[in-house]
Length: 418
Image 1: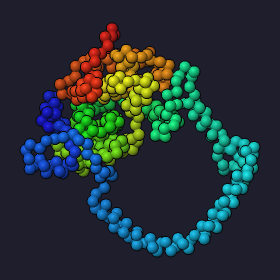
Image 2: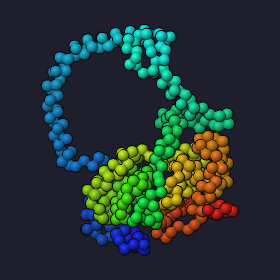
Image 3: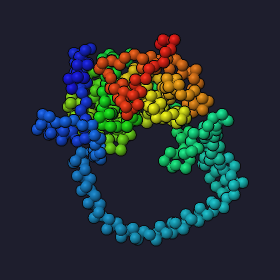
Image 4: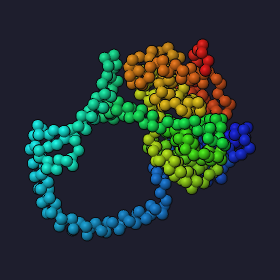
């Protein structure tokens, strides 16, 4: 706790961010063990508890249980009533079957601009044929591939879990979404928050993600939620860690199978905020973002582009390292996620000299290499500068052999400084 407090105290004499403490047991059990032992070892094993996903209280759950008992008693009475209604349903079913049979007798030639000779109320009907034509043209535009572009989804057509049929349309929709959800330069409006404070917060979130062993998507979505909330609200530095912890809680509920509990996030903030404060902040964030939490993140684009480039795991990890470093850098907040992912991949290809920016990458990313040159220079300058002493979580993480020690790879020697 004292470590992160010292970080912010270098800039301001106020309450700062607290050190994360995360392990495999619940927050209540952690406190009990800590009170009984001075040498309680912290671990980072992932907890797998399916509790409190909706923040429901015990009283609410008890009422729900009693209600289920009452409903069970009513089932016997309702069963008799349902048996009496079976005959009525059978007669209705016969009428419906007749109507469908008559509809199916309509010939395709009778359908013109969505109107049918079998349909008496033609003016009230939507022109389904016209809508189908528009939809088909849009889908065809996305799915059509030039001759010099490989179909990266063809091999996955037999795998239902990869939804290869929908992948191009899904990423096309994500690009449309990112154009609508652009983050502005919000620090101009924030009177009590600096770039350094934001960097410390994101560095802390990266450590929380590691200790809880959460998905990378959870971290990226949490950072997006933080930036979008700070774009919509002017806040004080005292609430900054609360915003970050709550954003991680919200993204965990979206991305994780077994998200940490509210009490766990209260615990890693060293009880600087109450449980109710976290729930209130969760509500405030939802209102500020109009409950629109389906935010495109660069990590998903990078995974897609890595597949296009057929990267090895080591080279893809290098691109991920560069991308994760951008989370802390405020200068990249306004970049579109798809462009940021493309720039990180392009730089990784150059650093490892393992491929060119092909027409297939141009097609799937939507960016020519010339459009990425300025961004690549900024990214290269970012990894070339030494990490701040109080923000080394990402560099330390990717210096490990598990991540191929990609943080130790030398940056490019570019003539143009950014």
